Amino acid sequence: MPVKVRCPGCQKVLTAPDAARGKALKCPDCETRVRIPAEGGGGAPAAKPKKVEDDDSLLAKLDLSKAVDSETELCPKCGADIPDGARECPKCGTDPTTGQLSKEARRRKSLKGVDPRDFYKVVWKDAWEFTLENLGSVLQTASYMLIFAGLAGFCAFMVGWCSDGPPKAFWGFLCAICSFTFPGWLFHLNVETVKLTTVKKSSLKDVKFDIFTSVALGIKYVVWAISHAWMPFGFLAYPISMIHFSMPVPYRAWMAWITMALALKNFGAVLMYFLARIVWSIPVMVASGIVGALLGNELLQSIENQTTPQFDWIKWTVLGVCGAVVVLIGSFAEVYLARVLGLIAYYFRDTLDLQTIVAEKQYVKKEVKVDKFGNPIESPFKKYGQLVFAIVAIIVTSNLIYYFYTNKQHILLPDSWARGMGIID
Image (cartoon, rainbow, N blue to C red; front, side, top):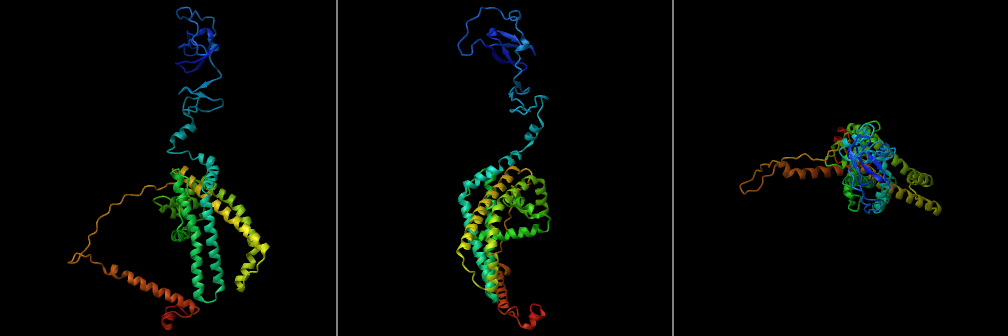
């Protein structure tokens, strides 16, 4: 039975006949002597041949040119088998035709971390599996969307319902608070998901809701939108800014010219994010369109006429189903897209110019002046500053309430002073 051996000189695979077992052959390419094992294929030792010195005459009748295995291609550098049709060695990346590293292997070797091209292979599946794993966060997001959208709508309705200034201001303030809360939660969800993804974690169970944090982040999101509104197509910087907001040094997220440059540099990943958002927005827009067609005009007329919308159980049932679809799909989409942001941060960290290290600061102890009893001496500003601030805040708030209560006719100043300052007519 023929046996295959590898030449120790040129690393080619040779096929030797069964009669050559226990002998040594010369490789037809490099003429290195190759020892043929004496054992058979079953592992049992072959019959001990007659003791004859190895020489070329013994196997002179063999056609050694046929001993080369032309069906197996070996890497000229590491000797590993190269599959049919492969352009490089799967082990070391050497191009078998040139004996040097292929262009793709050199690119991979130059990478500092993961290959960014793998992002496009895994993004859809990975984000889907992540969202299914965190269905609790999907339901959590849906509940916040439902609660605060409903509260914001109710407060907006009350603003239109009330006719006096102070109640309008009160309901308008509550409407603003409720309107900021849900975008702030999404901001928090995106940032925390990016952090988890970059450290190869996938559980959102420790991401908690806090209404004050959400309101603050909602205001922060509005300010960010204003900071990018002047830039053409400034919305393209949103994924890049969210990733930078999750870093220890987030100041680059505010600079539109930097985030836009990074968005163009990583345009493929940014385009994938917005493509995923468009895909998920289609069912949401369809359901929202049905809701608007059923109730939009009636609700606007009710606010304008200060009347209660008429109840139609068929219309309201359809409205409830469509609303549930909007909330659930929208919440699923937001968790999904948060994972996409995390994957962009993970795979493109080398081209996003992320600031992950906080510069070390050296703190110098301040000299504190003390009195003769050893108590710190407070400056006048520190001693009375909070009191002055509180008085000013009370005066401003009182004037605002009185200004709207009097239908923008008076403030808590003599009218001659207010007219001279241009506050009232």
